[in-house]
Each structure stands twice: as structure tokens, then as C-alpha cells.
Image 1 (tube, rainbow, N blue to C red):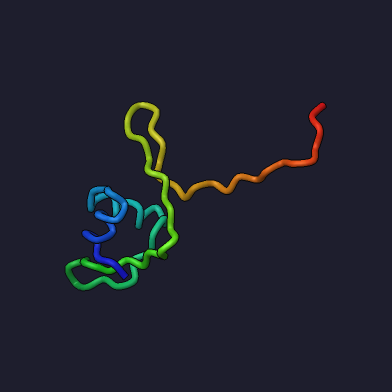
Image 2: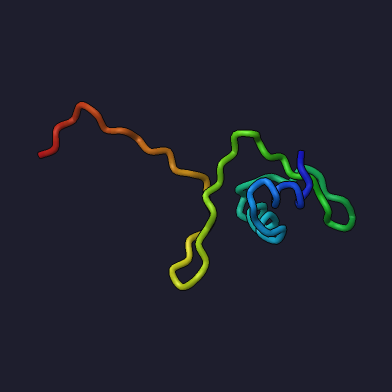
Length: 75
């Protein structure tokens, strides 16, 4: 379990982004005290693709699993 600051350092993001990812369901908060400080459960192999801000923004997400198509001929 990691603090918000430790998660931010691990993914090279701002602490507010850690909370945003928690609201989006990308990471899970395990413990929270009366001041809303908490610990995050981050699996060691977790990968998150950062979002892109701006006009054509994209949200952060888990990397998509790509299926390889082999042995099939295109028409």
C-alpha cells in the first residue's frame, strides 16, 4: 500500500491526478481517515496510460490488450 505522494512519484504525476484516477476506478483506495488521507492498493505490475489534456483530450486508462490475428487471410 502506498501513500498518495508515493503513487504520484511512481507514475510521475500530480497528487491530484492520483485522486482523479481513484474516482475513475483505475486505482483503489484501501484506507481513509477522517481527514480523507488514505493508502492506495497498487499492484506491482499495474500499468496506466496517462491521459492527454487539451481540446482533443483523452482520459487515463489501463493499456488495451491487443489480440494478434495470425493465420487468417485478408480478402
